[in-house]
Image (cartoon, rainbow, N blue to C red):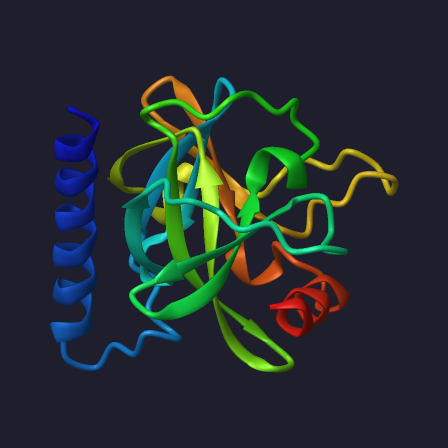
Length: 184
């Protein structure tokens, strides 16, 4: 069941990315397409720009790497390439839970001073691809100077729920990205 759901979402992601790339005049860096892959962590729904997503995979065996930040679960072998994997639960300070059959890895590409890093994000479950228009996105509310929200792109209003839209390019500080790249 989980395998079929993951495959359906992965197919939808692949089709959306292909359609966007086929449109004349759009570049991957500048396209504002409004398509977001949504996923769950605890009871909250998050979204990431579809163009940042490489693929969605089932949870693989993760090899722990010594002296990595606490939110880095380790590395996986993805078709011969070793990539770091981080837990968004731990990164966001949310209580950790055991993995389930719905736990999966979203493989993304993020820029760093070392170039583009391919990495995995462990999430509780993948939901769907949503088209969220500019009129349905608000800036993230201010929580004061002590709360870092630079990694939040905005708040998407979909039906009666709020989707926290993540700016994947800012999810890691430059120091964290450097530590991960050097550790892998």
